[in-house]
Length: 545
Picture (cartoon, rainbow, N blue to C red):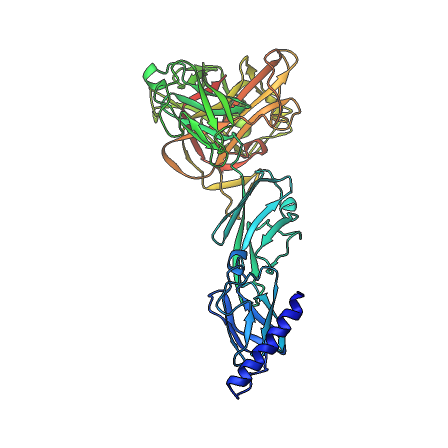
């Protein structure tokens, strides 16, 4: 029997039965009056518009939760619904059709019940990455802090062009945008994520750091200790300094290096600690900040050559009218210039002493060298002008009087077969009170000063010489050092001058001459100076390789 006919007959029979038994008619309405879900993921009450019902679930609702939604439905009197109220209904398909059948079974209504997801309230950065070559470590997210590393040598221009690829919560947006160029040259950039619901908002600090440095440079190296006479010189990975040739083993074990390194690098032996150089060379290892890169430096203590001058040996020379002191240690002086002036005192009017003399006002030993600037009157002699002030000058070299060219009289320099590095010693000084600019008394308050200078120059043969005309200007000069000071020194004070080679190279196969010049008037070569300026020199050392 056809099922539809069967059910129709059965319905008519039932209607007749109930009609016969009860005069009240059955309800013909097939209406859904109310529907709700007692599920935490459902937001609010469903909205009914005719036969369409819409309800919202939280954005995070899972498919498992959607499969087990339990509706509570209120219907017209006596009506039934399928799926039933209180039963689990699978909404993973989005819309479920509910059919309401009237009490009298004569009417039915279909309702489309649809769920929608609410806007996402999440505002998170879920992932970030860079394809730029300078990025060496991809970002790591720690709460609202995101850190990544770039190559140590990355330039600001490169950091201004970094392009992050950013994954955020669904429906969220981020500023600066994913895929856009971001300037990280300042180190940190603020990224703002706005949730899809228009309410959620999170700020992230994205921090760009440079990777640990691979550099292992020593930028400066100096040494201290009783044995050290010349501080360290750097030549690539070779570093050397000079020690006293008579230094003891104990002194060589007591040398302290002070080392400046690349940023965050370390060195062994450590800077500021005592290092034993009694064996000559010590290997220093610099480890970069990255902990991997290392460079070894050989640091050598070389024995210096030291020529010492205590100015102890003096001799008298000349006739009874013009006896003068002569140093017997290879030094010449302006005494010879004054000798002629004294011999012809009847014409020059000068009857005073000599500018260079031994003095018992010494630092050590029995004597020191005393150097004066003298008033030699400034008269004419055989058509030549005698200086008003003759500066006391003592120098390595010789003095051969040239009556027509006074500056040519000073023959500066002795043959020298070593590379001089430094001249040091002790001095006292007091400037005279009357300063003359050549023959004219200065009225502007100009003050005299002492000078110490050293010059190394190249020669072709033993007779090549520099004089007062070119000792500081000749192209033959390889290295020089000059010190001047007008301060009064009543006690012996140390001085030290280091020769500046100014990019020129010392060649041991060539021939050189070397001079050290002391003057009681720093501009005496121009005949400018103060009468009575006094310079005392003692314990001079020339330190050479």
